[in-house]
Image 1 (cartoon, helix red, strand yellow):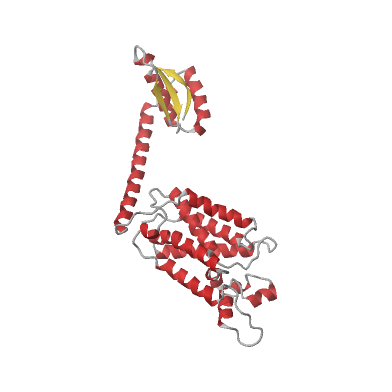
Image 2 (cartoon, helix red, strand yellow; image 1 turned 180 degrees about the vertical axis):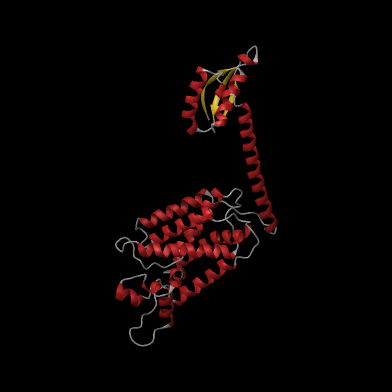
Length: 328
């Protein structure tokens, strides 16, 4: 808060604060040393928000010049605005209380966690578990995206799986250099299937752990259908962003679920800011860690990273957090 000046008399100070209220400036009058009568008691005028101080000071100077002007006869309007604000605050508190009670009633006696897992809700997360199991099977089946390549004769199963899940058929890419060609030919699943391919055990564990923690939150709150749609949109955005970036900037053939993971992170990060009473909020440390990791990847210190996929998925998740309907 910032003090902008002093007015004499409680009626005068309250009159000015009422006027500021109608200008959407939060202020309060604080009485100083008591005088012989309230009309002579000095009152310091305090402005709540720093960004309002300059405008409030201008209003203060105008008020001092003519405090009896009819412009400042706004007591009833100010009272109405204060009442509406009080009702809005009460409504938000009620929503938050309702959300917390709902979480407690569904957590089977366990503590409510800030980031999901069993402490958030006692609801199953079949979509999350299915993706984790599928990605793990595919990772081992394709030797962590490094299958043996058959030059002559029938292809091995590991190579066929990898070729089917990559964003483009490798032979098509080698022949044309068009990473979108397989999709243009109708193989639209390739927008999403690279999420099942991972290049190393660490790559797999990092993505699946974050998917379990963050994805579990979304699936428990919004249900499997919404969560699956969120994943598909974020993964599609990640795949397309990576492919459409210039080849000299990013290698187009990205693999891994990190784009979808960053999308889910973006959703859970932004959603509490746009939905009052949203039952979870990512701790600031986790936000800093994820954003820091995003930047670290861009430095090139960690080797070949699909930065375009990370950014594309993140932006898609943040956008969905803003436009999606409220959770029930």
